[in-house]
Length: 48
Image (spheres, rainbow, N blue to C red):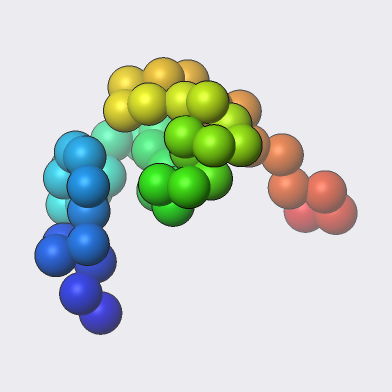
């Protein structure tokens, strides 16, 4: 996968060093959630 080449902000490999982290598509983050790099996002996984 070419994830590192497609990352717009931040560093994908920095997620290795944190317990909390999420990768969002740019359109989802900006258009639908209104979040930016460093913002807190609560993720809910129904049924898990």
